[in-house]
Image (cartoon, rainbow, N blue to C red; front, side, top):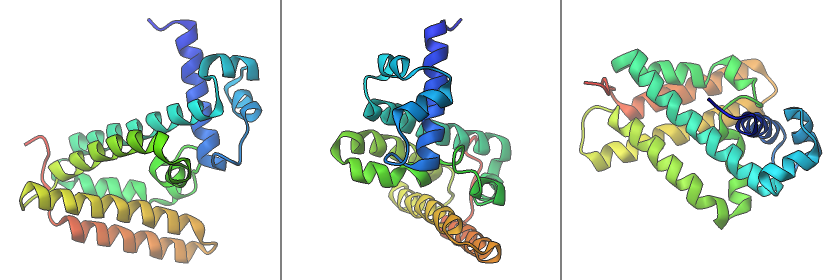
Length: 195
């Protein structure tokens, strides 16, 4: 059973994740993040100590969500997991949902600007995500599958970012479909990761 403090912290991490994803690190303040969690700014600082610590917690949770998502898509879709994942990832619904969308696409620019303190956390989680993807790819040696997995995930994240950045829906759809096709071509045939 979780304590009230743990539930409050979870609510604050979720609100921080939504706020940072929707507005970027510089585009949202502690007061807004606290309000989104239904707590005071004082309570927010009591849990995190700083906006930087809240961003770190939101980043870790967001990347853990990707890890959970890839695992779920692999488990539920077998050999077709990557097609199903790419379809979801580049879907119009996911493209339009910054606040609840992928942390890789929305938070990475802020990680780049933050530098060393967050780079290790980001790298660790991304290596785990890429390892899951590589394990779900067929053919080739482990190093080759890892290289292809990096190309797949960076292509999907880039495709999502570009598809979100354009005004015209038709252009957005074209970018998303192009990124999907490229990711699947790079991946080659996928395998059932549970096999």
